[in-house]
Image (cartoon, rainbow, N blue to C red; front, side, top):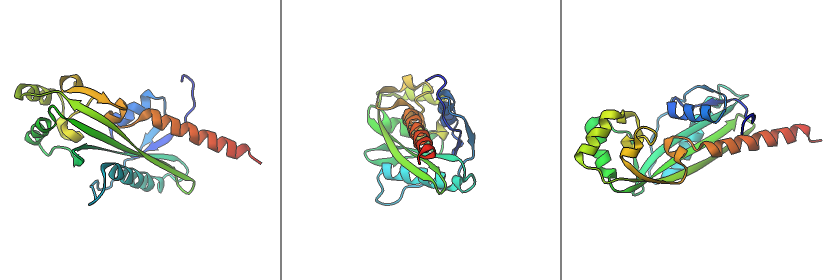
Length: 201
């Protein structure tokens, strides 16, 4: 909504895609990436992984900004329940796109909003993405246009996604990197809770 107030936050991520979603939502933020290892643990589901990493990032950065709201996030692509990371090189990116061709995979994003010693809330969002059937020429055209090496799954919905993606079920912004509508609602809840607490007797 125009004129809606959101508290400024610290984004514990260097992702330009998350930064752009926050700008579009009218949420003021500063950037302080959390330098933490990102890996899956044995027995973890993709949702558990992204929530754990989002919480770890938010907690680490909130130590540096104890009075501010910190947003940590982590996004993971999974196929048949197994995590799909960022490709190591161009040949790996092409192989990954071939693997996703004609199939439906899931994009999981974990989000944590916290203020040190005050509150912490975290959740995961999942969207399903179905790829078109891609031939060799389709993949070559796509990797020529998009930097696939810095993207989980070797693709980006917002960068020529129409070339390779047939359908998206669920939150499209989640596929880009942040379920921004849910973030906005959580911030509204925080503002409401803190305002009612401040005026309560």
